[in-house]
Length: 129
Image (cartoon, rainbow, N blue to C red; front, side):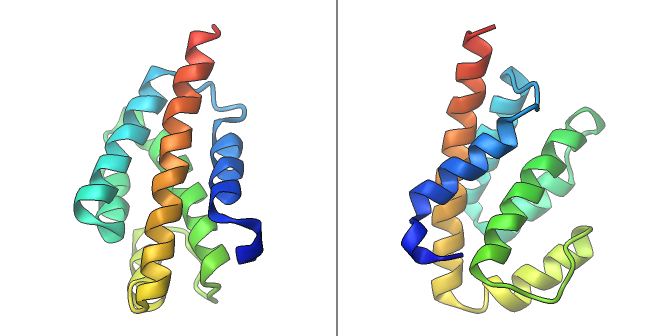
């Protein structure tokens, strides 16, 4: 990620892409809010665990959110690890993001802002229906 672009711009772009064509509504907003709470209370690795353990009716939305968050992290700290499942994500975040305080703090800040924008964007799109 080019830091000159700014974290806020990256968060806005990611949230808009996440909501585009998602049919985002109340369930989407609720899962984004829960994910934000997990991130703020327990950290990055807990978000991965949380999103990978969602019920069957939330799995598609959870994986979509996880994919968007993955793209942001890889933009901050590129890696040769392909993020396709829980195991590969655990390896990437443990070995790349969470071993460097700078990457950890940047990732957390970026994810928080993205989830906030996603949450409010989903609510806004629902209110226009």
